[in-house]
Image (cartoon, rainbow over all chains, first blue to last red; front, side, top):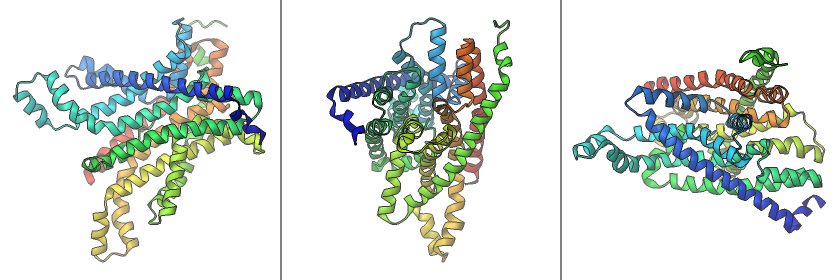
Length: 232
Length: 220
């Protein structure tokens, strides 16, 4: 099959590997960005003041209802219209951070709320300030409960970086398209690109599944498996 | 043709946007229907007490779940013609979305059945019910309650994912918005309008899912 010849060309393989690097870089940026913004939104949503709670709630509800692809396109064209001078990778990272934050915020909020009131009361009774209760007592326990859902959200974000192709992000899929446009072998090239994603994401999800089936979390994992449907 | 007031461009292009919206709705609902069928079959295969079938169904799920939907759509639209199979853009999107949502549905259904628990099945069998009756009258009613809220969320997921069909030239609301934007440069108005069309579907469904979750949880 002549369609596979591109795999024998080191320059083309290197070109694809570079694309995978960009995919990973953008995904890492989106994961960090969405976690930071998501944690902030979750805290705002749990605030006692309505003035903080309402805008955060509105943001989460609206953004979660949009396709991530629309957010990517919107941010990219809007930034261009406003002359913000965002590069394509930064624009995709920003879009996926803004989008992912809305999803992560819900996971983090649910995790914090799942910790029994008694834990708060006990920590307060010991003289910890509210921020200390959160940081030293509630968060360490909540983090364990959030981990599976957050991890699968991170895998979703990694897959979503491929959508950047539509606005010219020079990542794995885009580079595959460049190669097959020249050699007219879309089936073969797309198979290789798909395989790269398959290996990357199934490794990650196998790790998540293993962490989930740790004995002390079995009951929780069953609950998560049912509730964890906010895949996008 | 300069616009005189904010939103004018949306009013002017409303007929095209509505046509696009109709495509989005039809594509999402048709995909969800097919995905439910596929998901049920795969979930049943994954729950069969026969290891090779279980493994094959599991591989199927992992395969389609871990490849970004856009690559799957590219494959159907750009690669299949090169091996002699030409499908319309809409057919490609329909197949791609059905399989992609289908594997997530399979996982939700399987999780629902597993969450009911072995104890329930054993108790029903101990009471003298046949295996079929135990499944029909004990496991199924409980599993349905568990999976209806996730299935509603998966419909939302399918609607949102359908926006990717625009990349393979399906004229859904996203695709229409992009062409109006490139003709008029009214980026904010057009994409905000497109966003509203999606929210029109996803916000009520999200609320419905939460309501169902509360209601069904109380009865359990």
